[in-house]
Image (tube, rainbow, N blue to C red; front, side, top):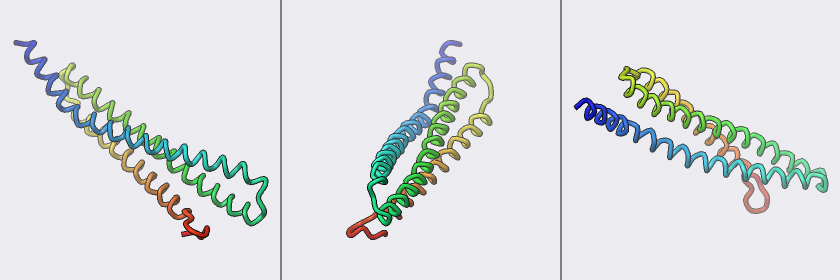
Length: 149
């Protein structure tokens, strides 16, 4: 019978761990988007840097302004990536703590709550950084005759 209660306890922990695992899936998808955007920013910056030597003064000034905007965007995306990875690590710590608490039969509810709140804080700040990057990208968007929006 003691084995049955142990299996039941682990089954319950697995049920509790399902939601954080789905959160990890969402964070992983967000990381895919962020890394893709960072790669596009880097590629665009490399193209602009290569062309700087052959541009006239007016075009050069515009390209330098674009490079500054790309630099700001890259910083925001880099911050968002770091925070998403931190969030994922904290969620993994929540899952590990759930299982550790079950095996040790210890009350780890406060620790789990604190770590999960930290994970959500990291995710919130990551999403704000992502929003700032999108805002910069939208402001520097050129449509039509090269006019700035």
